[in-house]
Amino acid sequence: MIALLQRVSRAEVVVAGEAVGSIGRGILAMVCAERGDDPDTADRLLERLLGYRIFPDAAGKMNLSVQDVGGGLLLVPQFTLAADTSGGMRPSFSSALAAEPARELFDYLVMRARLRHRLVSAGQFGAHMQVSLTNEGPVTFWLRAMSVEDLSSTATR
Image (cartoon, rainbow, N blue to C red; front, top):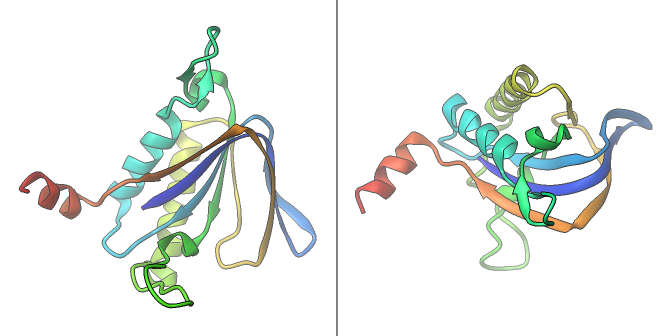
């Protein structure tokens, strides 16, 4: 799974003119499931999202996680993160997980996040969304949580 995470002072997702998710200070994470991803991959991604130290401590160093600062987590499905842009003028999405399994995995990620963190909000899978945010810093990171199969093949190299 891929996540593009941004440290924000606020973020909101609107669908058909209605706010479906919003947070104050925290992390906006655009999330994409790729072929081979499963619930274990989603759990690894969530662990990284909740524990990634991108908030400043008293000395101003990025040393605190969203959990440490009591911030919000806004999860937004975005399959375009799986785009292959290496050639041509149109991206290919062949590495993205098919729609229904991706929806199930996104729903699983949101459910698990709500069990582990008190301030979780989410966009709507498959909807045309308007996402607004104020990136704090700016601070933006691209994270990937690999499937068990990918991890084992990497370990044998």
